Image (cartoon, rainbow, N blue to C red; front, side, top):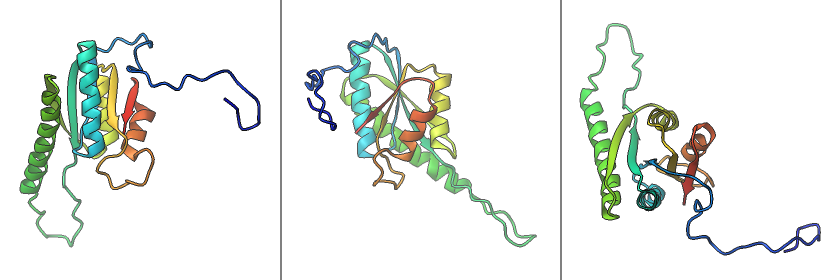
Length: 172
């Protein structure tokens, strides 16, 4: 292999490894995978499922949804809008998305449990949940449903990598 400055270096093993964690000494017992329904998060569930089977670990599929509550600052005396139906619909949609993630894990032969988290910060919810659960690793897709499809690393996955207390595996 030749570097940009023309210096030669030793041979580089470019063959893909079947298991990148095989020689890491990691013992994975608790795996958290973030699922938002996107294609990349579906791939993350697939990889998390493989790790779960390989390490005989437990798998938690998490989905974070935001409350549709919007602060109302109208003229004094107007009643506050009733958002209970909107909140229920957001929670139901979140439960549906989480169910799809659990179904993906089940298709791999993995028994996973799920957690529906409500938060205005997806990153904070995933990081705090993983910390509370003492996760050994977080698996997350590169880009999700946040509208930042042109970024190489999505804002959520980037935030989780920056703030998580445990290793994070980003899948694309």
